[in-house]
Length: 317
Image (cartoon, rainbow, N blue to C red; front, side, top):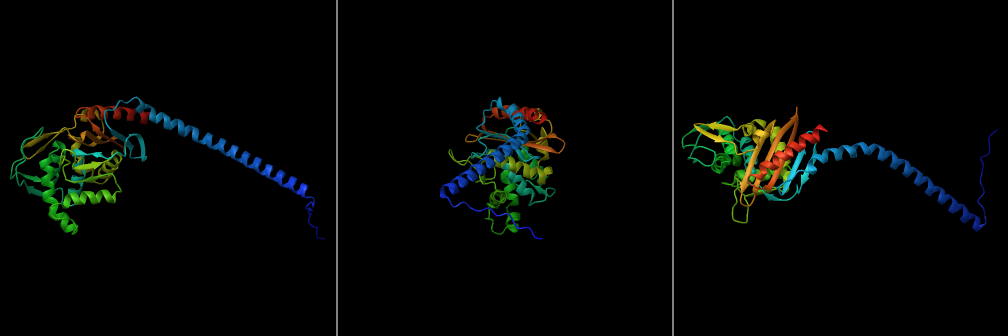
């Protein structure tokens, strides 16, 4: 025998109807509040350890006194930023420009190809002269340019690679193919705060730099080039390089204080002040990028040492 379903008759009295409606609304609100309270409590319990860990990682950087206008510490392995200050500010890059230059050239010319130096690079700063007619490899000239931060070396690399880049990219302008390709690379990597007017990073006028970029962009750029072409930048971790008969001392005075250094590049102009960017291994297959922009000539090295020390403390916790 089939059971007849229970049927609730709706009251006909309007006052009774309103009372039922209000009662149901109150029950619904109380139920939702209870669900939210339980959910919030469970989420708080889950996130508490993460918040504590995040605060623990930040703590070593709180007391770091920086001269730099902008800085960033980027953990490549986890893809997280451990520290940042004005990391998206667009600032003059100076000779950090020579890193994308070297990468672009190495992607176009074989690093093992030999060449004769077309004109002499006079003795400047910490580098002895490269003479016209010296036979060197493309990689050797890149090493010299990066380690000595040679503007003449940068111009020579751009001259040598101009035709090869135009062959590969017909739309590249003659005589400006390398700087064009450097800017195209920034677009491909979505580094929107960074662009180049020349290949060395030298100031073009008293109020216009040869290159601009952000600390965040440069951190991602350094991570990118070291992952794809580590050999191109290997010598930047050396105290000096010898090319032909010329010895170039590294312009990175902080180098001895950075264990596990993979690569580094200095930069200094009147507009930029002191810049320094490095990649170092804080552990096996655990690269960290630190970028300092807008410090002073000597202050950039102190800034970098302090950030490296803080990073070690943050990772160890």
